[in-house]
Image 1 (cartoon, rainbow, N blue to C red):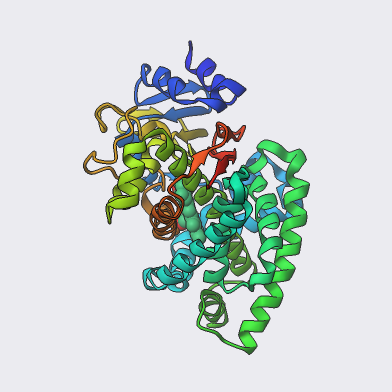
Image 2: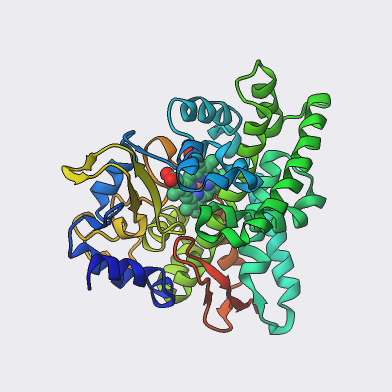
Length: 403
Ligand code: HEM
């Protein structure tokens, strides 16, 4: 197969179901593969790692959208994302990220440990009720997608009553995370963005009048402290925090449980061995990256590890392929939490390295052992149903029995 045929197969149903053999076919062409004029892909661990740290390769920002889709400003969801740090390049990115990080500190995340445990126990109680008498329960709908929203809502400072609505809005907004690949569906994301902007506007006013000890108050201060973070940037970044960690973390929790069922010995260790969850979660992240790929633009001619990339090229960095690079991970298709020095590419690298990595790791490290301990007879009621997407790889539905 030519590289162009392999890339076409990746986004077709077969590739969306199991992209891993296709990554290996691409690897036969080298760690960085020119696919056609204007498109290059990277599948090597070292090359992806380097490309993510290379400021000559830029994320799709407002100027980039002007170039490829001049009508993009008519979509409030795209405007919202381009106001966030994920769609900014240095120097603007550096400042925005610093300001948002000042509210989303490691200490604030670490301080959430006990409340995350409490949220997990509450969701497990719910699973217990729903699954009484052996009734199959959808693990994705009732647990894996609920926990991330509950956690990020608590972190931002969103009231519990609003979480159901928040879940729907977040899910609609993730359509726009795929940029203009699906322009027809962007209307759904736009409506969600408009509603969310109104909601956040009220919440921001509320914190201005009644400061609280939460991230939102810290971000409102960063905004009010002069004009360093505009209102739109504040809303755009709040929207990013809500959506970037929602499906991704639910995918991590989904893969984590599926792999535990496939490896009963490891499930027993998760249940019984304190601290094992740390290595287990890293290996889940390596083995099944929830975000399979990200992309950058080379405006001017450049290179990745000496391999030339012409100006005007989109570079797709296949994080999941890098995670299975045999020159970095021996026997990469084997799921082995005992492998040393994992450091998967699943959270990216360099200036845009995932701000929520510590939070999602914490959620999975707490949730998986508690789930297995609480329900010793936990079992799959039917095989998991995978989402039909390539980039966002996760489960759509996973029926389990808890008793
Ligand atoms: C397993 C869960 C997660 C995965 C796999 C994941 C993956 C990623 C990846 C790959 C990037 C870098 C994208 C790029 O460089 O193009 C990223 C960035 C980001 N993530 Fe996550 N993420 C997860 C959870 C979260 C959570 C829980 C939050 C927040 C609550 C979050 C917030 C962010 C933010 C704000 C950025 C942008 C950072 C920047 O542009 O400087 N993520 N994430």
